[in-house]
Image (cartoon, rainbow, N blue to C red; front, side, top):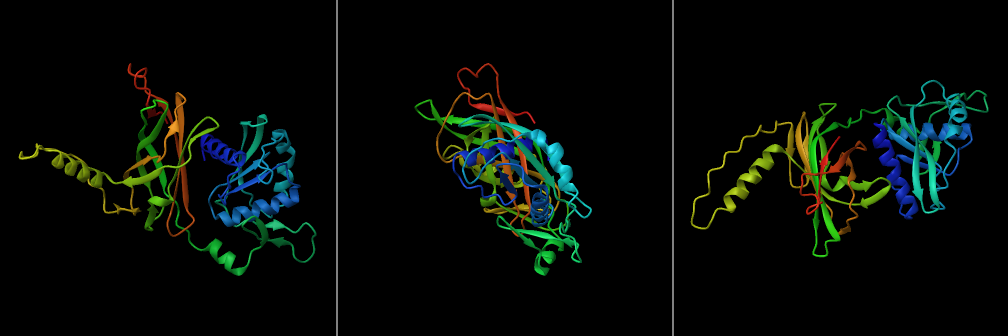
Length: 339
């Protein structure tokens, strides 16, 4: 994952901790302080095995039970992680670490964010007590850890639907202000190119898409109603709208719509997108309640799409800057994707 995606993921989690909201992501572990290395190795291995190839996030310096962010000493990682690695039999989840600053209710804090690549699963740890049972394959259930059973091993080693890659091509955010000129409703429009990593049919239900909008460490919009659309469906909708708006009694004005038909590998229904082959899709969303506009020049849009029949998830994000085209003083309500 890119550092900006890891940081955005961590900041969203920290916001939920301080707001006393449940942290429902099974790929996240929060610790108030550094765990003892042997215990940490077992929990990391269990977490990585249960993730089955998806990245997992550990945040050191966040107390989920107390709902506080006390912070942690990131320098401790240099001594801690080598001891953790020594507990593994061979393969160790690849680590990306970041020091993330967070403006908590008790002041500025720094947490250590550890993002583990679990694609080399299964992970096996050494028995710290030695003896005839030399190794263990740990497994995470909810927040607990136990030894993997036969069914766990079958689940872990069975073929997985590999999540496709989403490449953001372009996008725009807009804020529709209400009469008060203080509150408004955000909407976004993204153009993406989807590249599957297997030939399996992948189904993305719209109700499983999570989109959040933030500004730095501040969560601006927590939920959007999101849908996807193929180029073919969009062109058909535009043609229908063009026909409907013709004046009564007059023939619709000729409309020429040029588009590349979506390949048979990408289809959509009212409720989901079905992907079998690479292609372009549009993602749009709108929040259903007004939010306060604080004049943000930069906004971060974070999305997670989930496959219907597996645990495969794809997280991606984009940074948007306010459009300054000479009208920004009167209409400060549009932002364009920068990357």
